[in-house]
Structure formats: C-alpha cells, structure tokens
Image (cartoon, rainbow over all chains, first blue to last red; front, side, top):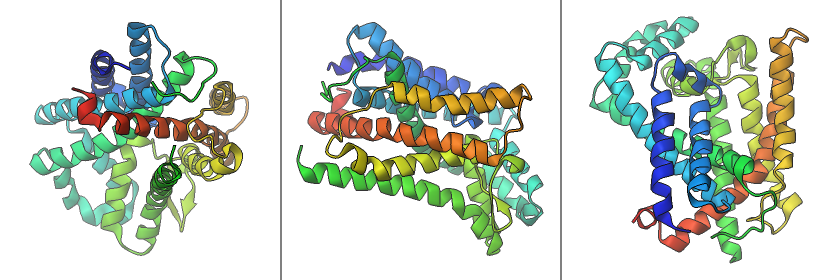
Length: 158
Length: 165
C-alpha cells in the first residue's frame, strides 16, 4: 500500500462530491441517503483502482471514502458559505421548511438566526459535515470496492 | 488479531449504530414532551439526509421520524446486521462476504422505487422499510469488516496523519 496513491483519488472524489453537495437543486439529491457523498466514495475507489492497477481491499476502499468525505465536507462548507453570502442560504431555507411543517415550531422562528452565516454556524456546519460526510463517504467506499474490487476477498490488508 | 482488538472496535461501532438510531427516534419524543427547541434542531440536522416527507415516514407519539421509512429501514438493518454478525460470521471479522449478496440486497429497493414510479403498485411505508432493512442488514456484512480492516490499516500506519505523510 502506497499512501501517496491516495492523494489524487481523495482530492478529486472529495471535490466532486463537495461541489455537487453545494450546487443548488443538484444538492437536493443528497436527501437520498447522502447520494453525492456515496458517489464520491465510489469515484475515489474507481480512481485509485485505475491509477494503481491493483486490487483494492474493502478497508482501503472505506478509508478512501472516509477521506473523500472529509474533503467533500470542507469543499461544501466553503461553497455553501459563499452562496449564503451571495444571498442563497440553504441552511435558513431548511430551517424555514421545518418551522412551516410543524405549528409547534412557530414560536422558534428566532432559531433561524442560528442558520445565518457567521463563525458559529460555519464551524457547527463544518463539524456536522465532517462526521456525516466521513461516515457516508466510508460507506460509499465500501460500495465502490464491491463494484470495482475483486470477486473474492482473502481478508488480507495491504 | 488479538481478541481485545475486535471486541473493543465491535462495541464501538455497535454503539455508534445504536446511537444513530436513538437520535432518529428522539425528535418526535422530544416534541411530545414539549421540548420543541431541541426537537427542531434535530429535525434540522437530519434534513440534509432525507426528504422527510411525513406521508413516507413512520410516526412516533403522533410526530414523524426525521427520516423516511426507507432510510429508517436501512439504518435499522445496519444495526441488525451488526448485531447478528458474530452469530453468522463467527471470528471472520476482517473477511467480507461475496459482493453478489450486496447487489441482490439492493434489488428490492430498486424494484420498489421503479415499480412505484411506474405506478404499477402503490409503495407504502412498510414495503419501503423492509426493502431498506434487507439492504442495510447485508451492507453491515461489508461495512463491519471494512471498518475493521480500515482501523487495522490506520493502526499499522500510526494514524491518519502518518498515513498522509
């Protein structure tokens, strides 16, 4: 296992997943179990397999997916912050949707201020994204290894 | 592999999966107990992960879960799969089953989505839940060994920071 092989797949897959998770309308597909993050994990495994030409074990695929998810979290947080500063605050829209769905939450409209762009919301959003995107990215890496990996596994870890 | 290694990390991932399911069931419980602010926050946290359409979600104490029945099925299946893994795989913690099973397990979800989209049959919460449950259960037999392999990989390399040097 050569760790320098990981840089390209992780960065490319993470960037793709992060951008798709931030672009308005396109990012809506993430409501299907973080689809773009899963796809990012799959892409990362595919690129690693193409670059290295060797068999990828599930643990390695999960690791690639995890790292891609972390990169995607940073990329999407940066892009979402820029979009929010440009007047397109996805977080506030989601909070608005929650409050509109449940009459019980009407009294908490003040919580929408928490979704406004600020240091607190950026850091909180980044932390949540790192955890969620990392976990789903790892799952995506596992699925990617099942698709692009070898048929039978020996259980050995390179 | 030392026995403590697999038990320690097995308990960790089991606890994480159980906690995730607990978090999913928490928001409707909090609303029913009039702890609305925390409940709203949790619904908000889950909103990027699921469409949260109430008609496609299970209800708990009169309020919908923050994820749909299919997502709930997948997460429940993951927990179930992790629970029964030692009974079925024994000591083969690092070995993944044949990938055919994952593709077979994905078939009910795909069929449910396609048949419902074509209007051939009306999908309901339970068909979505059980199709997700099946997939999640099988996914656990891939995710758990992958997690062990990944952890072993990182421990051998001295952590993620050393991995990237």
